[in-house]
Image (spheres, each protein chain N blue to C red):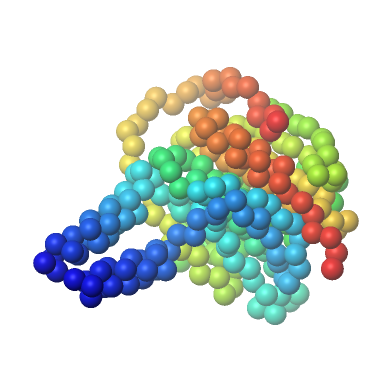
Length: 188
Length: 93
């Protein structure tokens, strides 16, 4: 009987290790790219964090600028269409360039994009811009909200939500919490 | 005796498998793939994917998970062009 219990415990331990899902538990996540820590944010309880990947400049040809690492976040529960992600663009460094960047970005993410709200504010002492609105993807009407924060003199942190309106309503507290948790990492 | 002792483990494994495969009938990785590569597109002039001509190729060295299409859903009437139900703006406050 004792052996059997041991076997069960070992099997459960293996299951826990190989489960493949990393659950965030009130953790502070540091966004780091190309060896530089750029900003931190708090991942909500019971959300899955996908760290994405990045490409080293040495893997690219002709001095091409690497694409940024994109970190995705999802709540683990429920049937929903949503995506939220954080990244730091490698092609812009100032909020002044945000409009041009969004003009390129928006059509890549959604069709029929309409901006319904813009705002400028300070988030944790940093200049920030908020853009939200509506669009469609795969025939679905979706809402989006995007925040850009000047976390360094030459780096902008981006956080975006795209999803069904009712899903935004359900997770509004968590999404705003993520936005307000973004803090610049001071130069090392 | 051993079979009965292993029964809870079998039930746990079965439940985990059901949750993972079912996942509420929605595959979050499909949208994750699409939106990630939409962002990559802005930073790269990316060639098409060999699997889907309209898919951008990820940066060299990257091997993202292959997306699965979303579950089929019934057709619904499309709104007229320019028509969209009004919703309050997301003020993020």
